Length: 165
Image (cartoon, rainbow, N blue to C red; front, side, top):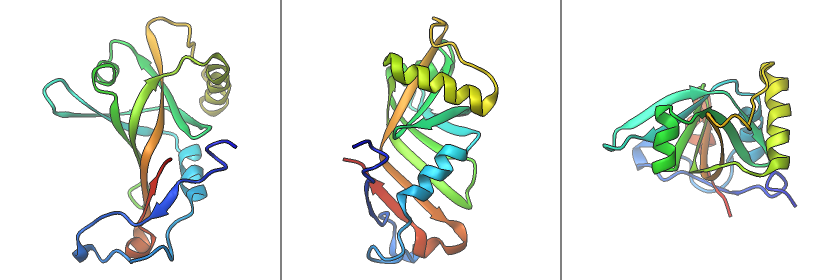
């Protein structure tokens, strides 16, 4: 069974009482909603950590495949150097109204079959085919350890936190 078939456990994010977050699991968002957003998004904001501890946020193009956000970047870019040294990252989609955020550890993608699927999906989505064999670039995969989502119009009731196995 793939990660897409085994949804993560859903609950509420831990926030101060004043935020008015609904209690209990009633009304939490379905993981499928987040997957739809992750699949459809054009830009993904990657936040990594600089050597001095300051955050660094940059948008990338990527694709959601088998429970992972896959993206590539030039090996000499600030984000690539940050991730190589400190692979814990945060990914945020473009919308703050239909919000999805992922947290986890990015890994260099080396699986040939998954790289081939990435190239095909990326080409179909952006009409450009990345070249994983290009030594100047690195292809990374983030399988989230935790994710958050909510709909701004109904924030207290839809605020959801997912934890992955």
